[in-house]
Every structure is written in structure tokens, then in C-alpha cells.
Amino acid sequence: MDSARPPTAPARGHPARGIVVAIDGPSGSGKSTVAREVARRLGLRYLDTGALYRAVTWCALEHRLDLEDPEALAELAERVVLQISTDPADFWLTADGRDATAVIRTRPVTNAVSVVSAVPDVRAHLLRLQRELIGSGGIVVEGRDIGTAVAPDAHVKVFLTASSSARAVRRSRELDGPVDSATDAAAAMSQTRAEIDRRDRLDSSRAAAPLVRARDAVELDSTSLTAEQVVAEVLDMANEITSPHPLPVLGR
Ligand code: DC
Image (tube, rainbow, N blue to C red; front, side):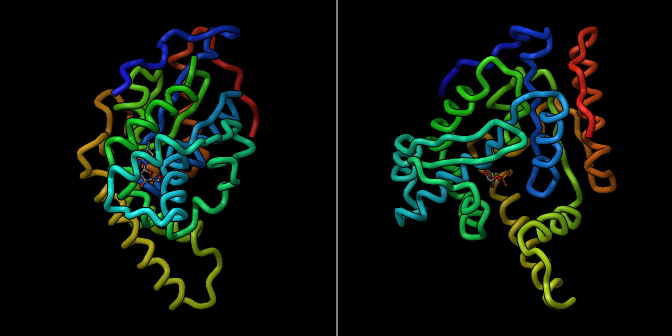
């Protein structure tokens, strides 16, 4: 495993420009919305690490790889060239030059990604890439193991949770869009909830960098908070860390 860590010292320019904000948590906890908005408001970059695991999974499905073959998956993760935007206002991702921005969010990828992301050598390859992207900081990074494995020296660490039913409602809205009837809505929700529960179980029980709260992470339960309230809490944490030189915060 790569032992290099992102630097702890803030970098050039504004004294707080090198800050690293880690936001971990299970699916549907609101990580992406919050991480992107915090990055935008603080003028920082944003890294969606789940998108990298999704991209490898998409390539594996495209190449019809056996998902039970960890060596083939690891070889793919080493070989594929991933490029990802770190602009919080403009997300895109390519795999070997092919645009994969939308396809990585589809159900086949979502349902296969936990298996691919449990392979230790896949994680080792993507760990290196994530640390390269984090570079000298100035970034908000969201994922499952950012505070524990990818950036253990991050200046701000948040572990974002929400009740399993709140998470299912949020994910259902994202995945299923408007549905025709209450029965369709209930069926879509129960499928999404079962998928979320299965993915959480796999993500939390895998041997390599499982989803666990870092000891020094602040746990925020977003069940009855709005995204804006969670964003405000994270901005407060960032301000506290960067005091007496807090980053200027942009408006909504
Ligand atoms: O956040 P997401 O749903 O896009 O993540 C997709 C999958 O990738 C998720 O099932 C767990 C995995 N993942 C991971 O293992 N480590 C990360 N840092 C980010 C995501």
C-alpha cells in the first residue's frame, strides 16, 4: 500500500487554501450534495471518489469481466485511464477517453459496485489515484474511507449518516424520478431500500477499508436536517480549523 499521505500544512496563497475536508458515510446520507456545496462555497475543488469505483465497475461490465475474478478486476483498475473533473459546478468523468458521466449512475453499475470496490488491489490502485488528485489539498473529498484510509490527516472529517428509510427516500427520488402511482412509488422505494441495505452491508463488512467512522470524525445525522443545515455545520468546522484566517464563503 502507498504510504504517502496528503500534506497537513496548508499550501500557497490564502493560508487555508491547502485544506482537506473529508466527508464519509453510507449511500443516501446526502454526502454528494453537501460535499459539492461546501466546495463551491469555499472555492475549493471537489472529488467524488465513489465515481472512480463506479467507473471501474462500468468498464468491468462493458468488458464482460467475471465479477468473481478479483485478479481480472485489479488488472482492469490498474490499466484503465480515468479522468475526473474536480470542479464542483461541472462534474464529468471519462474512462479510456469515453464519457462515463451518466452511465456510472445506472442501476446495473450501482448494483455491482460493492463487489468491485471490495477487491483490495482495486482499492490500492484507486487509492493512489485519489491521493494524486488530492495533491496539495484545497479540496473536499467524499467517499467511504477518506477519513480512515485515503486522507487520514484531513483537516476536517465528517461522518454523515441518516436513517435507512430517509436514505431510501432520497435515493429513490434520484434513481426513479416521478412514478405513475402510489403502488409504483412503494414498489420502487422498497427495491431501493433493499439495494441500499445490501450495499451498506457489503461496504461495511468488507475486509479492505470498510465503511467505518474515523475515530476523530464528527458524526452528523442528517435525518431531520436540510442539506443547507448540514452545509452550514461543515462550513463552521472548516472555519474553526482555518481560524484566524478563515476562507471567504461564497453566497448560495
Ligand atoms: O458514493 P457512491 O454510492 O457513488 O459509491 C459507490 C460505491 O463505491 C459504494 O458502494 C462504495 C464504494 N466506495 C468505496 O468503497 N470507497 C470510497 N471511497 C467511495 C466509494
